Figure 1 (cartoon, rainbow, N blue to C red):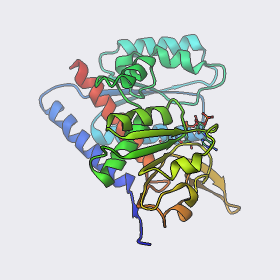
Figure 2 (figure 1 turned 135 degrees about the horizontal axis):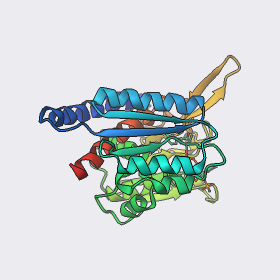
Figure 3 (figure 1 turned 90 degrees about the horizontal axis):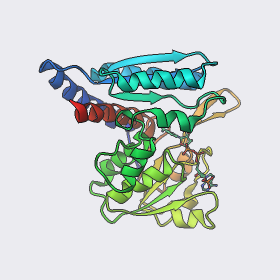
Length: 288
Ligand code: NDP
């Protein structure tokens, strides 16, 4: 079997960020204000902390203004909603991101709905979910699934007519991924925990997207030879000598079968942040 193509999400994300930086530089050279992103984090969560720092760093690289709001673990819902209201009104801010997970006393759905749909750069607001569902180009689309589509196109070019199997049906990855591949004229199958024959369905895929949150669950028995495998999973596992990150796909076992495959880390993860910057610029362009 030939060596499969390792899909380098870091390189592709770097290219995307460089393109966004050029577009932002062109705006500021015309004397316009830069796009602005507000990142709201409640409490201390080491993993969230890393994600937030990466997002801020990438904003700086792209010339996007970033503003960090770190709130105490015991922040009330009222205070958080008040902050979102003020960011919704802030003319310097085009995108608002509330870093998840939130502490248990805060009701995620109510909080995400308070973000103005026009500034909802995560694409989680019901208005944007609906716009994506009806194929309206004004939708701000969730960043991780948007990254999956870009990676698949990087390998295959036009995706028309491809059969995509998405394993996982969460609101933030699986379902929007299905919608986005449908918009590329793919045929899409969704597999979930109640599917009777997940591996059998997955073996029909030209493009297999896996977002289940179960370390290395998908092995070679799920993959058609030559398929493009996109692993969304990020799981920290104990190796006995420390910890390491693995995906939802067993890379060692799947790589010899796949035509192309994303590594973890360095595959989908970097694309998520590039998508966030892209959405911030899109939100800016809608108002400027
Ligand atoms: P969720 O836990 O919200 O959803 C998991 C989905 O997997 C559910 O739809 C569930 O089915 C399905 N599932 C669970 N077990 C099986 C099984 N045995 N067979 C088939 N389907 C199954 O996870 P998320 O979508 O939020 O995240 C998935 C993964 O992606 C995680 O590892 C997460 O860390 C990662 N992630 C990575 C991001 C990135 O930037 N790269 C961003 C977001 C997430 P059911 O609905 O029936 O319960």
